[in-house]
Amino acid sequence: MALQNTLKALSDPIRREILNMLKGGKMSAGEIVEKFPVTGASISRHLSVLKDADLIRDTREGKYIYYELNASVLEEIMLWISDLKGVDGNEGL
Image (cartoon, rainbow, N blue to C red; front, side, top):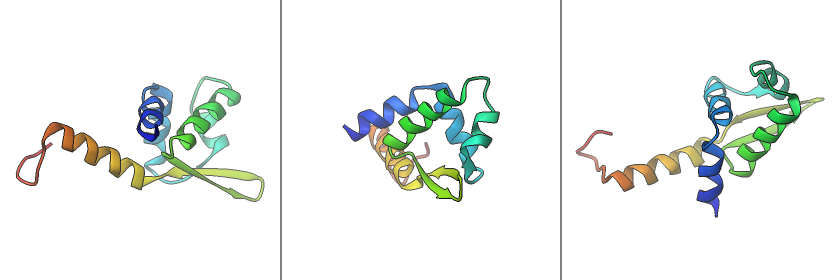
């Protein structure tokens, strides 16, 4: 079920863009919302899906919630995909 949630989360272009944005470090929900032409409620839902898939983590600092990548889950996905492709230490991706 975890992999299914992860793949579902990655299937949406807005969620993939949020992950790309978080590569640069943690961001507040407000900073993320500013980057998209959709409602705050829509971004909140996207963040919830990413969090449920364990692709991001959130921390509260005062009245703000900050989001950051959960690199360990991303690494697991990359290893799984590499294994599917039959990539070993002697081949490139």
